[in-house]
Each structure stands twice: as C-alpha cells, then as structure tokens.
Image 1 (cartoon, rainbow, N blue to C red):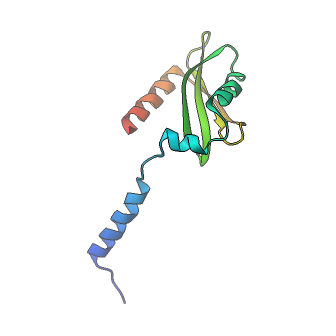
Image 2 (cartoon, helix red, strand yellow; image 1 turned 120 degrees about the vertical axis):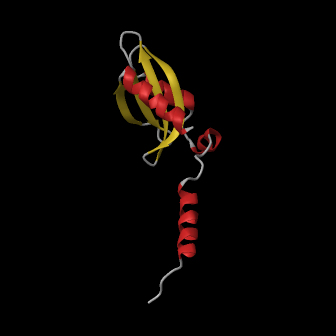
Length: 114
C-alpha cells in the first residue's frame, strides 16, 4: 500500500491553497468583459427606485455573474436599496433593501477584506 510523505501532502495543499486565494480581477479587467455601460446600468437601476440617488457603484462578480451593483438612497427612507444589473444583458438580477445597520456591517466587512 502506498503512503504519500507528509512533505508531498504539504506541497500539494500549499499549491491548491495558492489558487484558492487568487487575486480578484481589477475593475479594468471586469469592465473589458462588460457589454452594458455603467451609465446604462445606472439608468436601469434608478428606474426601480423613485427619486433615488446612487451612493455607490461597483462592477463585480456575484454568484458567477458579472453585475453592476448600485446602492441607491432615497431622502424619505433609511438605508439603501441595492440593485444589481447584469453587465452582459442589462437585465435586473437582484433588488434588495438594506437597513442602515446592515449597510454599515457590509461596509465594515468589505473594508476588512481589502
């Protein structure tokens, strides 16, 4: 029966882990893949939130899809509405309401990850 050495196993694990922590693609790399412009995606997102104002926008991969993600605030409401627009088709992928506290937690988690 063959038993791999501990060193061989350690090398294999290190090699595998190095690929799982690969750097995220840059905004420029993602933008090169997008078929829908930031401006067009923003118009689509703002059409879903009456009298909304974009607080932040980002092009990202989310659940395997390339999406424009917008946090949109409304003067009369606390928190934001997060709208994701497919960067290839222009279709709305997700509409999610986030409370002010949930938004703060998400911002803190993103800051910690960067």
